[in-house]
Image (cartoon, rainbow, N blue to C red; front, side, top):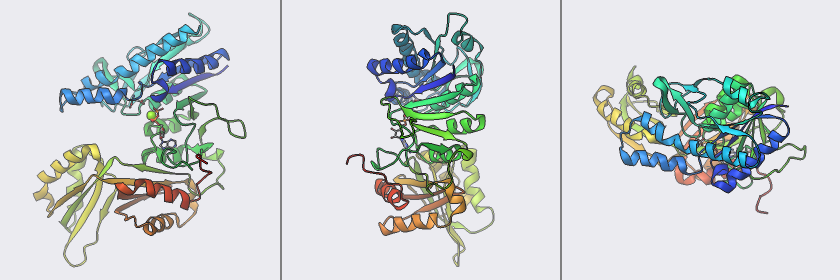
Length: 421
Ligand code: ADP
Ligand code: ASP
Ligand code: MG
């Protein structure tokens, strides 16, 4: 017998037929004698719909009330799954975030989980009580200060699942989604992308943070810290590898063969916007005068490029911020023009960050050079660059996104057989 957490995403929960399919998968695990907790997302598209209602009601909505509205999608699917399970003879009940509770920080709309009380839940899931009840938990939800409903940020159900698995000391956390694992890049963009049977926590953390939305970044960080065994797999098919395994396992570095491909994966992110300040005076403290007010306004800056001033005594500074924060960032910078001392403020939201990730990069030179050459050969201009020990990211014009991802996938030898062939 094992204790497992199963998480089902929005596409897997979209409509009663699919919820019945999920119930069958849960029953299969429960029939083997396992203790099962299920974390569910809202039906696909539902959270977007609810977010839009809030925006329509007021552009300056109260985030605490936004959380009340957007968390409702998960309430519906958890109740429906409990009903579907009971209908096939599996005892089940739903536990709202506030009923457990899942306690979070006060950062409404992107709260962090701080503690989960599991005593009642584990008692219900065990042999005693009403007898091996399946616990259905709405993802994305928690309870903040003052017992207010909170949500964990978009894609947050992955984090709910990993946090539940850690709190329950589960043997594994299975993330069921609409693809059968983590691929070398988004398989919807590159049909020749290949499924990885294993990926390290560190690589998955980088891939998620640079745009591979298959897992929320925070969920991977938490899994790494708490050593949760996470597997990503499909809720729609049961394809197995040659060795009989399904999906992708997220594992420690000691479990992967370091002799494999130099690059593990490629990701892209269209959610950043570029800002350039021209003719910033080249003096100590000038850069701080740009980024301090942005930090004070809680705006995250990602890529930064500063040109060297040769003769003019001034330099251009280019950087990126989340697209959703662009208007606020421009406002902060306009107000600070005198204090910063720049000539023009230019912005461009039509950019994409493309990144290559792989632990093999640590011991090999030339990864960045190969990236720049491949893009250059296709006439794709690089507007900014950042690197980490296991990642290189470049900023390019948005229209070239698909082309850039495809040619890089080929250049690093990641192409598999075409799925369409
Ligand atoms: P869910 O609703 O189950 O949480 P998401 O839409 O959040 O599902 O994440 C799954 C999607 O992530 C896939 O449909 C795929 O398009 C996308 N994706 C992006 N990069 C990757 C990758 N490297 N491997 C697999 N899927 C990826
Ligand atoms: N329903 C939420 C969202 O769409 C949380 C999730 O599905 O992970 O962001
Ligand atoms: Mg998701």
